[in-house]
Length: 347
Image 1 (cartoon, one colour):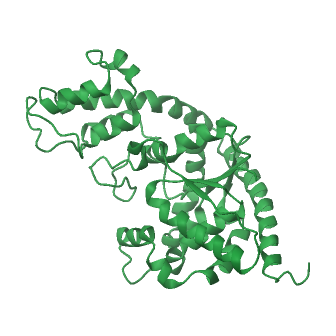
Image 2 (image 1 turned 90 degrees about the vertical axis):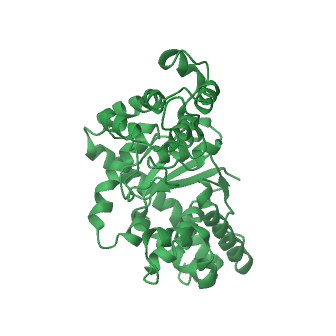
Image 3 (image 1 turned 90 degrees about the horizontal axis):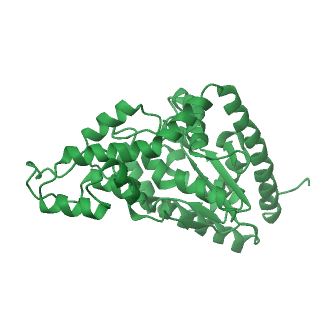
């Protein structure tokens, strides 16, 4: 069996460092590992419309922004198929067929759906498309017979629901669909990077993001205003690491060889942590170090993004060609699904 990856993002805004450490960086590593036969990276515009139906322009304008973020981070269209979800109409048809295999009560129990509904304040006025997006996601995954889906831990319930749909379809009709496995980030710090305000989730709507395309000055300002330990008032006070956003970011981005250049009085991150917890180390000094660490990672990405942004039509043509390829693959799976369901009347 081929080893196939399917993953993607909703184009509701530019991508941020949470996306980068949680998925983008890993995707590039997987792409370049040579371990996978096919890799599909989807810009999930149709899914984004489930809670942005009244603002399609917001979704439209971010298609190229997300593509720029993808390619500047190292996703290569010659190695990975980058495509736009809405172009592949077969995904919608698969979603319709799969919806007969899932109950309303099962969707209500999905922890990811419940938390997202609460986050958006939908309460009783939940758009049907948003409520059923676990089914849509299952269609996306199975259309390409993905064996591996890189996700954060908050998306595990979605993968489990996709696996249930696969098992239900295969047992009801025929062994057509492939049951996917989730691939979590290797580092616990990268599973869910908090917002700069210390909130559990970095979110565009909360305004607590550091974007990959932010200017160095914007990044500096955001880091200097980051949430730390509220009880660490004086430099000599012992500081806490738990819940301290600055150290969470250092866990995700820092490696020990950066100290020689940017903070030579320490040899490693553990030494910095030890000094902070016993007292005598101020937040400003740690934040300045974090800025240097973050810019070490982001500067090459930003330089490449600026270069790519000079030719947006070329970016869109890359997405167009990838979407054509993705549509062909999804069409083949849809044909197999309809044959298994005995509804291929005229084939």
